[in-house]
Length: 251
Image (cartoon, rainbow, N blue to C red; front, top):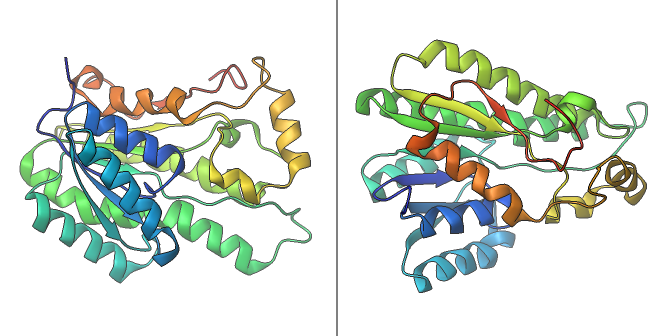
């Protein structure tokens, strides 16, 4: 039985990687989805995701916005609501990754990571949450990382942004737990996505060897956790962090 029939979902960073897999699976489960992508370079990928969903009998649109920017984020949510009328599910998934030791890291590297990975989560949630209040229901799912718990050399800016997402999720859940809105997060283990292209191979090897299964996950092994948190099956999950990580980290 489809778990997300008649649900309307906005997924940031959905033109590739985990976001793409989540969007496709949400549509298969009956949701109408908006594929957010950051810039013209990702338009073709976003359009391909929409085509895949429509060809499979689902409903989807693509909306461009750099979700770390106030005006573009606001426009994204406005376009979504104009298209769909209301919003049942928000997946804050937009993110980047690169590597640098702290002594060599530039301020711009730090600021860009925090803006795209963390600031965007606040901005999109802030823009969406009043609409969920009016509805009296909603699901918000934030993408963190298992590295938020264990750290990783060369990834202090990345792990800091993901740890903050977990803390944000917990605090927000305490604020709105009685409003019919569930806020949870997913902390995937290392997964084969384009984000790995910007990570130093030596860092990736350190991460890979720490996984009991000895390999990175596929996106299809991660996406079902998002479906669970978006569906009514997770109605009693509040402020939780689920981590499909192949045994890399025990939460």
